[in-house]
Every structure is written in C-alpha cells, then in structure tokens.
Image (cartoon, rainbow, N blue to C red):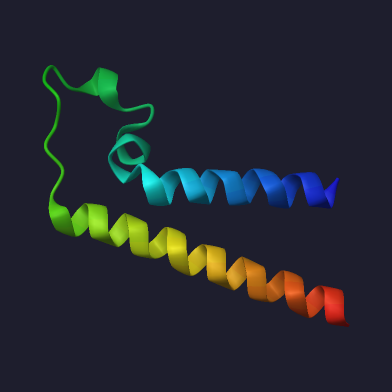
Length: 67
C-alpha cells in the first residue's frame, strides 16, 4: 500500500515538473474566460518545488530503507 502511494506521488511530482503550466491550471481553467498567462517566475517556482519535493521524498525513503 505504501509503495503504491509513493509511486503515485512520484508520478504527480514528475508531471508537475515537466508540465508546470498544466499543473498550475489543473481544475481552474473553467474560472477564466480566456487562457490565463503564467509568469516565468511562477513556472520556475513550481518546477523548483517539485524537484525539491522529489529529492526530499527520495532521501526520506532511503533513510527508512536503511534503518
């Protein structure tokens, strides 16, 4: 059960990293009449948060496996 949850979280974070525009607008497109313009800083911020999350989760998993 835990392994499946980790795989889903990794998949979501990888999707967010490679497609930050779509992930930022996921579920919110209906709120706007036109396609909203995302700033480069918002895209960069989203990608960096996803990458940091992937690294932290990987380190936590390694620590749990070792101990």
